Image 1 (tube, rainbow, N blue to C red):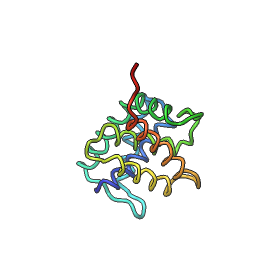
Image 2: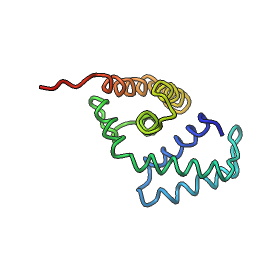
Image 3: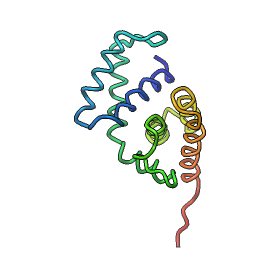
Length: 148
C-alpha cells in the first residue's frame, strides 16, 4: 500500500469518527478492517501488516483530535469544526495530523493530497474550502509572533 492509498483508507476511518462516540470507535475500526477483506472494485485487499499500520495511524490521529480540532477552529473564521461538513472535517483532520505530527509528509504534500481527497469525496466547494483552511494554518505558522 502506498502513501496515497494509506491516506485514502485513513480518511475513510476518520469519517467514522464524525458519527460515533469514542467508545464505539474500536468496534467501527474492526468492522471497517474486516470489510477490507472483501474489497470493492478498485480497492486493495489489505494484508495484516497494512491493517496494523492503518490501526496505528488511526489511533495516533484520534489521540490528537483535541489539538487538531483546536488548530482547525483557529484557522476557520466563523466555522467551528462541529459545524463543518463531515467529509471536509475528516480531510482537514487528516491533513493537520500529517502537517503537525508526521515528519515524513511535507506540508505542501499534505495540502495537495487533502485537496485531491476533497475533489474525490467532497462537494463542489470542498477543494477550495480545504485548501483555504490549510493555507491559513501554514501562514499562521510562518507569521512571527510579536512580543512586547
